[in-house]
Amino acid sequence: SLKVLAIGPTGTGKTLGLLKMPGPIAALDGEDGLRPYRAKFEFDYDTFNDINEVNAKLEEAVSDAATLARYNTFGVDGFTVAWHAALS
Image 1 (tube, helix red, strand yellow):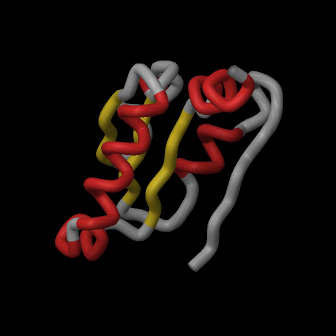
Image 2: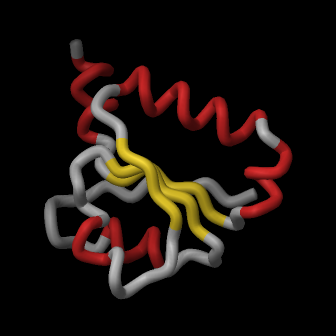
């Protein structure tokens, strides 16, 4: 499986790159960065507010065989929350 971490300043295309990955796509959105794309791209999403939510939601997704079979791409958009958690 391919694992990608896109790092860059605002406006460099990280979110757009996620949405151009092979679908169907499931994404976790922590900074509301997916909002402008919801009408233009087809993807499922959920939101999170802190790193514990990201961990719990990812663990839930990967432990469910039906969820794994449904999506080709999983993404976390807005990893700043995780970055700040790692620094503290």
